Every structure is written in C-alpha cells, then in structure tokens.
Image (tube, rainbow, N blue to C red; front, side, top):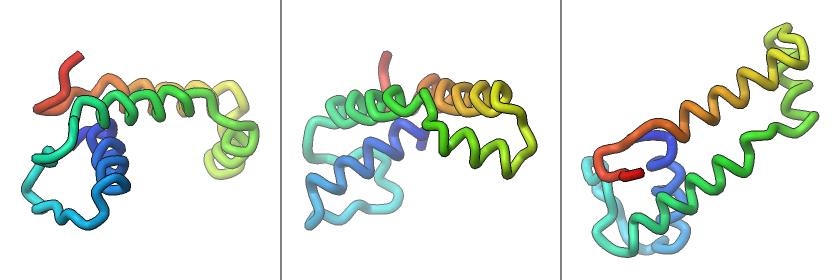
Length: 90
C-alpha cells in the first residue's frame, strides 16, 4: 500500500468507524475511494513545505543544514505523492 493509500485509508476509517477492514483488503468496498485518494494527496501536498520546527528537528537529529533538511523533507513528500498503487490512477 502506498503512502497516499495509507493516508486515504486513515481518512476512510474516520468516516466509517464501525466498519471493519479485512487486513488483506487493499481498498474499502464502501464509499468513493477516489475521493479519499484525492483528499490524501491534497493533505500530503499541503505539508510539502515543512514548518520551521520540523526543519529544526531534522537538523538536530541528522546534522543536516537548513537547506538539506528542507530538500530531504520535500523529496520524501514528492516520493510519497509519486507512488502509484494498484487502484490509484493519475
């Protein structure tokens, strides 16, 4: 399951708290899955620019300079957004 699909699943679970997911089930049978994928992508895109606190944490933990911390964070989000799952189109 891609990062976008994991985020979409988390959003789906908020809307469907009483419905169990079979662990092997990659995509929920109810609800509009494409909407959840779109919302998950939007959420990841919205955090592509890290906060100053996030950058400072990366810098402290990794000894990266500020520019490197920013590039690493952005590349991680870009990688998550570029993953393609079995049911994800676009």
